[in-house]
Length: 380
Image 1: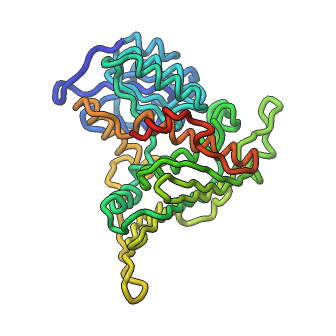
Image 2: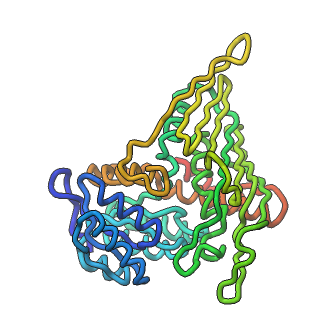
Image 3: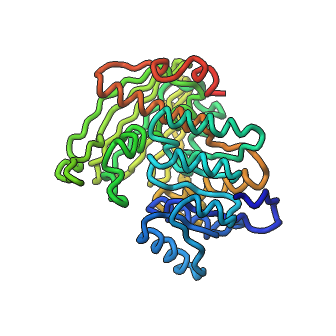
């Protein structure tokens, strides 16, 4: 159970990591580098992953920490002030609810859950704790990629006027191998539009400062993993899609995803066009472009490098370190999460709408997936 709250300066915030696969190891490296925090426990039911976690500590000159085969054992040990949940997507729900019931603040990796019903279970379970509910932060770290964060700041500052069009391109390599190949199947991931693209749907909402009303998508599994079999089953995850999202504000956004575009320079390219100009962010070139429309001709475009200052780069250009740093600050100051449970649900809901649109070949209204109360209240 929780050992109680801590105050800034009392002692380092003791952090446990549940799930020590690829993303868990990145979080462990972040905790090791983070001032005011220390790793005090790790949890996984896969022995090789636990060994990798302990190796990460040893490579930094640190002693091994207690390890556990189940999250119940970790919670009962009373070694943690906060927890990072980085297990496979389909295992999030019960773990998140148990951590919340134990009174521990947590950062849960995206997506919040693989289905809307499980998202609702988490939200209602945390809300039922009332004033005793601890912080739950959803790990949507793309917000904290340095050029993206700068683009968001410029958009919200009104540099380009009212936001009209948002375009996001991710052209990248296929899904990487994961423990027990869990990420090869929609039943475990929630589908590519949820597993991978929740990041972009979260960014669309954040930039537009509006809620989606309709989703139209076209996608397929054209190339990746078709020659693989696991227990006699062929992977069913999509590897490319176009997704168009209409917002209540009148803004519209487009996602262009291709996961067999390894030979590319910038994996992520974001653009936002408003009444008065255009913003662009390029990663990993770490470039921000700001274009302001001119009265007579094209106008003026400035370009600058905006690289992450995070001491740990990891697989996400330093953004997961910045996210953990802000999570730490929120815990120590009893502040609310920047990436809320509502944000987590919305990003899953848009992904589910995209999958329905692809499967059924039609536009999908968000009102088909969310109740009137959810539509009215989730954006608050």
